[in-house]
Amino acid sequence: MEAVRIGLQVLLVIGGLFLTLLVLLHKGKGGGLSDMFGGGMSTSLGSSSVAERNLDRFTVAVGIIWFACIVGIGLIDRFSA
Image (cartoon, rainbow, N blue to C red; front, side, top):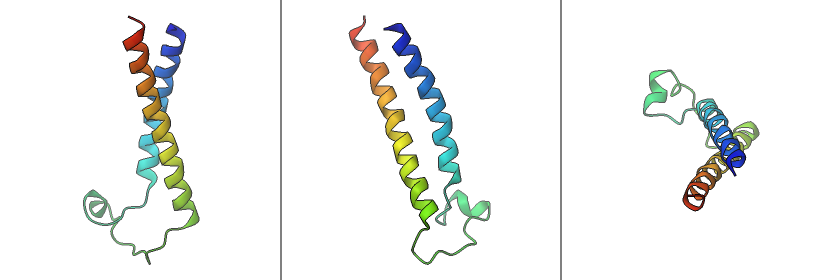
């Protein structure tokens, strides 16, 4: 059971770093910190590109995997004591 826990912890760290990278790749929607770095300069016509939609889907998938790792580690801690 310890190998599963270590595997989930490694996946959690890698997933967290990858999730941070994916969030930073998103286009700024205006307002907030994205304007400070010039993200508010470009205007969107209300439709997102195929790449942006795929990035959204991939970010959600990695987020779900990240959350599942947290739940898995919690369950292992709860029932292995």
